[in-house]
Each structure stands twice: as C-alpha cells, then as structure tokens.
Image (cartoon, rainbow, N blue to C red; front, side):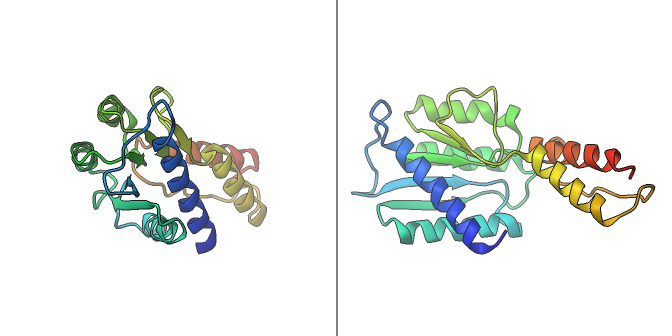
Length: 192
C-alpha cells in the first residue's frame, strides 16, 4: 500500500471515531473547545506499519481541523499491559472517543468496556473483537482473504513441491492467525 492509501484509511478512521463521538445517543461534550479529542491507541508505535498509520492520523487532523487526535501505543506489540495502561489513562483524561487496535482481545475487552461505561465511544481498528458488542464500529480488512491472496500470489511465482516458510507476527494475535490460515490454505492448495 502506498502512503496515500494509509492517509485515506487514517482519515476514514478518525472520521468514524469523530462521528461515533457525536452520535445523538452517546453525545460527548468535547474536552478541548470545538475540537473532538480522539485517542488512537495502536499495538506498537515503533513498527513501520503503525508509524504510517500515525502519519495518516496527523494528516487527518490537517484535513479536518475539528479533530484533535493523539497517536499512542506501547513500544512492542507484546506489551499488552502497556496498551491497557495507555487506554486507562485516556479514559481518565475523558477523551471524546477511542480508536484502538487491540493486541490481545481477551485481555483488552474489560478495559474497553470501562471506556464505554464512561460514555466514551470505542472504534476498533485492524483487529476486531467479535465478542465486544459495545464497540461503535470496526474499521479493518478481511485478514483471512488477505492471507489467501498473498498465498495465491506466491503460489503463482513458484512450482508445486517448492517449500515456503511463513514468518508472522506475535503468536495469538487474531490478525496474524487469520492471515496465516489464509496463506497456508492457498499454498497447500497449490502443492507448496
């Protein structure tokens, strides 16, 4: 993906969170004048992928000056406790909305519920938590399909019988699990 796509995705994300914050039933009073304060909490601020998302968030604020977004996250995707602490701090700061890319759904859901209970809309990004019904929205991709497409692309470059290694992200992360499942299925179907 090129940087324009990331910027567009980030603008869409921030807009979705902003609209969630302004929904009549869950209307939030803004904490910074006329601006809607949004905390975007990702899995890790040090990875190249999430840095591009952060650049998109910055661009979204330029494109829509009514939004004030803060881009936050731990240094490592495996720092679940760090991500929870960051979200709890944003709940205490009474942000108008949260956009969160959860690292571990089962551990993060209770904290996200605290946000909703405090009147803060939550939009999940990148990784959905199917059992977290209190979310306002999910913005993400079909990761299994993405893995399948990658597997099919690789299969088109190789011959049946070739060996392929899959290098993936953190164990237990549903996004990585789905991508790996899709890729493995496509690769095995091609005889790899």
